[in-house]
Length: 150
Image (cartoon, rainbow, N blue to C red; front, side, top):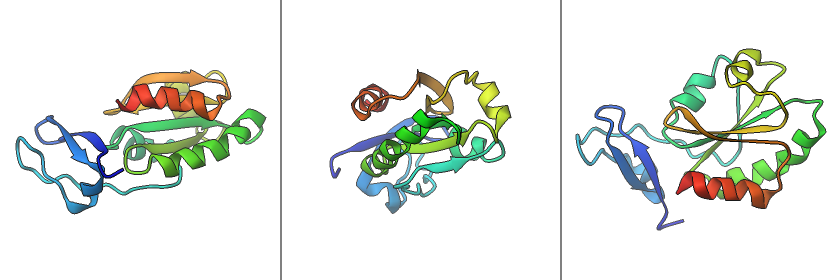
């Protein structure tokens, strides 16, 4: 993890910066305009999001976000939960994993046309860059992540 880097876009000038993961908590600055980046919390567990917190947690996230759209009654969703917990620990500092209960948050799920469960939405710079539907094994999710993070 010491050599791993994360790509962060400066909110001031829009420049993309490659920051070493080990320096995220040190208060790095933009290489172009020298504005400091806000500290990036390193979550080693998925973050629960709602219609109210979605913009702050997902759209405004400086890290790429994997959003798991799920429901309590969905057995495949429950089967994927431990995999996503483990991926959150594995990719802490490089990726934020968020969970959205579609039954309790219909505005966000309809905005992104979530039609089947579970659905994974991959966000970078506040925009959806990829999606995956259905219960996927860990290896398949990591294939998506490999393309998504590199």
